[in-house]
Every structure is written in C-alpha cells, then in structure tokens.
Image 1: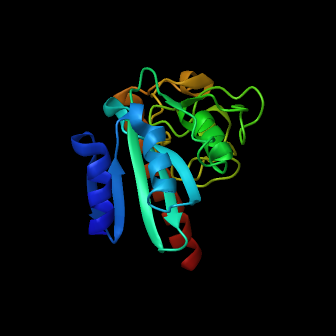
Image 2: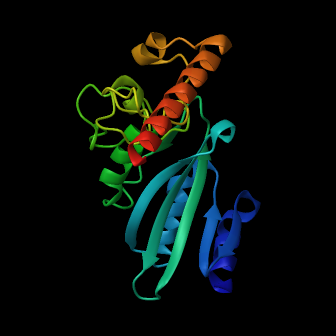
Length: 219
C-alpha cells in the first residue's frame, strides 16, 4: 500500500490526496487530470480491471465522480475520485482507457446529468424516452405518489375509497416535494382549525354512540 501511495505522490505531487479506508485506497485528483490518473492506474499500478463508475450528488460542492479499478495480479483495489461543478458537470470520457466505462458513463449521465465529452454514444440507458430530469440528483422531486393516487390504503386514510369510519392521518408527501406541488396538492386545501375541531368532536360522538350500542347488545 505504501508503495502505491509513493508512486502516486511521485507522479502527481501535491495535486492529489490519498486516503485509506477499510483496506481500500482512494485517490482524489483534479478534474483536468482525471484521464491521466486512470491511465496511470492501468499502466503503472497494474489496475487493468475496470469495476464500476458512478457519481455522488454533494449539493453545493458539485458532483463527485468515482471509478473503481482492480489489479488482478496484485489483488488490490483503487478508487479514483474527482469533482465537477454543479452548474457545468463535465469530464472527458474514460472509454479510451477502460472500454467497460461506456455504459457506466451513460448511466451516470442520465441519472446525475454529468456529461462525458468524447463518449462514443452518450444516450440514455435505463430511463424511458421523454423522461425529464436526473432522478439521482438530490433536488429531483420524487413525485410519483403525488401525481398518481396510491392503490389501496398503505396508511390509514390514504386510500381514495370510502373511509368515513377509518381514522385519518395527514397525508405524507415524498421527500423533496413541495406542499402545494401537483394537481392533488391543489385539490386539498388546508382545513381551518374550527373545522378540524368540529371533525374531532363528531368522531368522538360517533365513537360514543357505537360504544353505547355495544353495551346495549351485551345487556
């Protein structure tokens, strides 16, 4: 491990930082030296096996892009990581270095919006035609349960069926969805406090009547 760190430091100097976590070495490199670092890992560190490539949304810090490679002969991992700005997330494609990065870059492009310049076919891989947005970004609105009624009653009061005798709970929105988002949000105005109190009183009266009827049957 120390030998690898020494070789990385000799090649890239203070431009990189290296850390070890759970026996795996991670090297952070500037975006402009991304391809050079991957080529060095393949040719000089014997990491000829490409495992995976993905991104992490770090919000204001931009996107971290990571590539995990492996040395079959020396049996050691290496995680190469860089960061790109949020307003223009771009990197040169790694496909000339590792052909296996092709589909991984396509997935990262559609899920996070990171563009890989020079990619031979940077088109959507998993999402349907016409899909808008990048669903693994943290600012992506998870709107499925807001735009479409949920089938059945997952929580008390969540079904669209007749729930007059079912205790109701405030409908929870998926994470990141504004309170007034979508047609269903606009259809359900917030009740006034007086209405909520009246509803509670009626519910209490109904419970009392039902309890009295049950007592009468027992007698």
